[in-house]
Length: 317
Image 1 (spheres, helix red, strand yellow):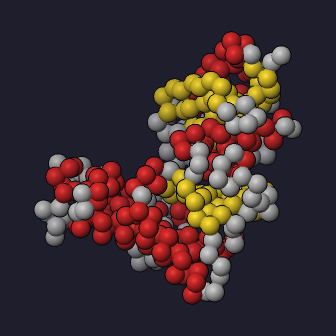
Image 2 (cartoon, one colour):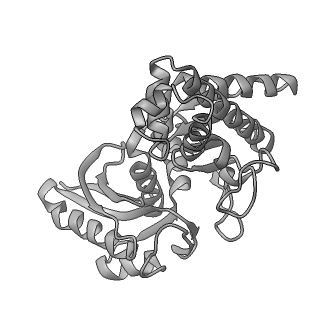
Image 3 (tube, helix red, strand yellow):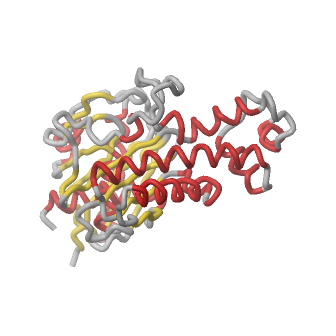
């Protein structure tokens, strides 16, 4: 007897990852292709068709397909309304894929999908009020409020990375100054480390990177493991800014749990410790009970499993 499964697809700027997922969150099969930055929808169709063609090999019946896509998404129609870093050759993703493969399709913002995945399969399983913050090159977020995903009127809601922490801070690509993304992301960490080289040229950061222009957040993280004071100071500064952002999350949404995901969680205590301490200080000052702050249980599969969770809901499972 075939097992009813779904396909979850995570669309990234570099690669598009997909998997056939069982109802318990187990990954049955995987597919991955480089993302065509000029034809994102074409890449989505290709990985979906790859897995559908192999479904019989592992006796899986595909009930639905879920997609987590970068950009502003109109979830009702499954269409991209704006994506700054990736062009979708057909913005009506759900309709394009559904017409091609004949399977029900749902599309949502990638961070929204990841938040739903944590609620369904991860460390926030069963919680109706969940805040997910993804920490990487930029900062993304997804919010579950009262058991429902928060999308906003046009699909552009829940953008924590572009809330203002310092109105006199660095210019952001969104047009504003002092966004959380410019103070606590991987990009921010790299920028602050480069700035620090003016006065700290002997830092291990520079030795690891080879030149100031080549400095990335990974070099800062590695230098911190070698107890480089400059690296640890940069990460502490970024972590405190993150803690301020998280305190705003608490004030706005009063979540049961805040989940941190993305590559920067691997930096660990030099970055997450100051964030946690800042969050605790600010919530204590307001006489709020401490919130549960956790790290994703789904790791690199958060996007895939989140998209799969949406697909299971679409299929009524």
